[in-house]
Length: 258
Image 1 (tube, helix red, strand yellow):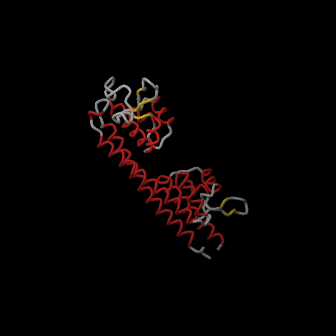
Image 2 (spheres, rainbow, N blue to C red):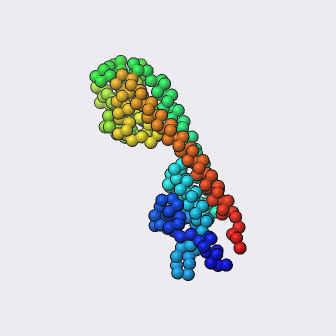
Image 3 (tube, one colour):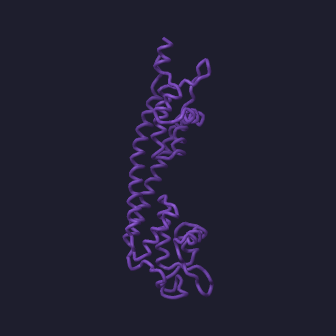
């Protein structure tokens, strides 16, 4: 009877690893990290995994694409510690972040609709309506502090974007302070939104350059289409992860066979 139980329910690390294209060391690491429940040991000290561990690994692997490795690991550790409320809270946070990212995408798309081709700054073209214009003098320019505050950034971030060529403020001739005109503010807003969407500065630079060069928005529209697709993929991955996590929870709640 014991032999039948072993052959039916015992799984080796390699059995779990092969099912997901992992190494056996990765499976052992997941157990040590609490992603898998602790395994029993044979009299010879070998790990004896079971269908419970297989379900846990399926759940974790399915959660990663939608929630990321770190969040997926935290969810599994919470479940394995019987802290399901904490696991559900972590999942809710991921869904809230996805919703926030969708709103960010909508904000970028709205900004695109508001962009007029004539507003794009031509190389060497006019920049505002006066060399010393600032907020309060026709609202044609803004200093770095107020702009950073409006965007929820540090001034150092705007200076970093300037070094990368993403924003090109002029200098006030009297004070030497940076002054951002309407086109600069537009560029800063677009950079900010794309950074929140996961784009790197080197990926954003050519998009901003295209927007400046006579209002060419097509490259940015392509980037937004890609972004939209990635959000949709995350949403579907979350559904898959939820199904596997629910299956794992059911296995955990099933009384062991005698």
